[in-house]
Length: 116
Ligand SMILES: [Zn+2]
Image (cartoon, rainbow, N blue to C red):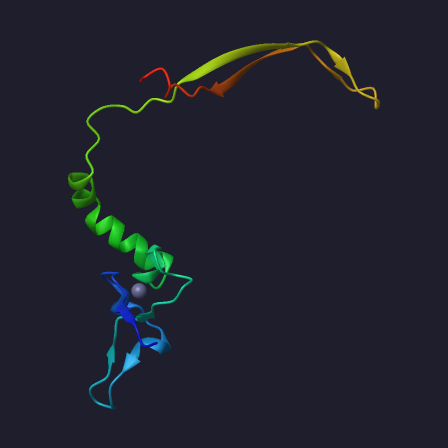
């Protein structure tokens, strides 16, 4: 298997690391990293990016294009029910007392069947 991709980080070739040095004396360069395609990075961003830094650089440079591709024109909503649970004052075995308190527990509701 010799399946590779070049790192898509726009500044990958600007990082001063030994493994990026290529060429002969007098005409040396820092080169974009080559990323071997493996079962571990296939279908992840790590098949196209050599590091978190390169992934971040790419995202910062192209975020407006991603938003143009995937616009959000309205808010998303998760159906919930709010359960009010009243907890009474409680003293534990060490003598510490917790005052009574009210918990608002959020439970997600599956409304998929109501929409049919
Ligand atoms: Zn990179």
